[in-house]
Image (cartoon, rainbow, N blue to C red):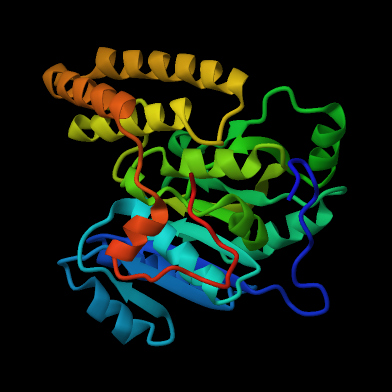
Length: 327
């Protein structure tokens, strides 16, 4: 598909087939609450896929008991959110999804969340958005800064006005907390990068999907992200800082997610965020270790092809679907 060309509108002549994909690891109560909310949507998805990252808290048994119609994938090892979403998206594409609704296991969508996402896609004039993101609130009703989509820089006035007329805002990236993705565009641009394990996998994936295409934030679609604490992406991550550094470098120095000028823009933004993280940290020794190892691996290595990672997890190549892994 040429860059910038409008994707076809799926589902013409029949209801669009929406497949919800949730990835979980040892958060059984929250996952069950999330699944109950997904199934209680005013416009429910046609199918739900849960990818269980080798949980040890009885997650799989609880899902089978409470939601026997849901497709449950039990992985033999924890492949992180990145591997789980890549696996679930690959299954959704194989099953003929028109849209994939990506969602974290601690995300509780309000009853009309999915209907609002689908409605927004139809109301935005011109080329259909390839991605629509929900408005994410914390448990006390405040907007969750960790999941605020990045506003699209240098957006044309026409694109901005058509989005605003539909009650939306143009965006350049979003998180996996709740996004509706055009499956045809995912087939064209590729799956999430499974080898990222965690952090920046949603940033890279959505930036890659939206490069040269339209994405919007739909405030009418509301979800509650039940994180343990309220905060933004510069909250001290401890040892996980390694993944932030390595994966951000992988995204900036390679691949097709960023235009050349964006590499400089997001490199500068990352350095400022890392500085704030260090300034607020009570354990800078751990952060320094993660920074050093992340810089070394991010500059010297590259992520393995997603097809290879999924094959290790037991998923054969999806021949005949037109899908390909992110690169």
